[in-house]
Length: 90
Image (tube, rainbow, N blue to C red; front, side, top):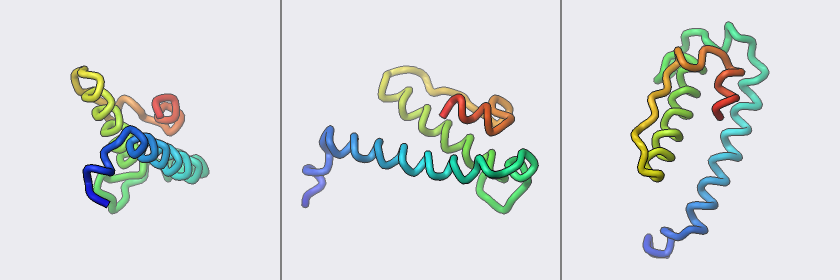
């Protein structure tokens, strides 16, 4: 299959649906952690589970902003200090 065949509305709908499915599975597992484990320093690219999830959410928000012709959102860990705060935005 050529790449030209992949760039369709159906492909992007499938990609979005898969991303939501994966996100929901990750969030269900993280919901089992207490706050200290959620914010604990870890050997991860973004320093903690919270940092990783905030990065993930911020990147999704930026892509949505760009598709809608808006300025990039600026989301940081200070904006989402708890898992519950992140869930409201996710």
